[in-house]
Image (tube, rainbow, N blue to C red; front, side, top):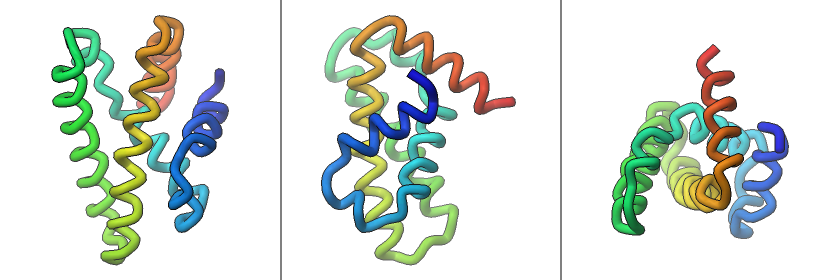
Length: 113
């Protein structure tokens, strides 16, 4: 899977409200989630409660970045709701197999460059 295919993967699985915002905005959410993915912390998690706590912090961080872009109120609300779904989808994918975790590390390194 490539980074571009990950964007497609997430977009295809998002709820219908995804059609209320441009695809580029959703791709940007995916990119931001990947660039800030807490792989090191997630590898230390031992159960659903641990994952939920880390993901809650990750969603909060992504929402703060959305608010920092100074979108309008409605736009911020829509993107914040989609941010939760994006993080959840990426987490499920990340947990599926070890190869996915390695891909995420590669994408994060590319995002930092």
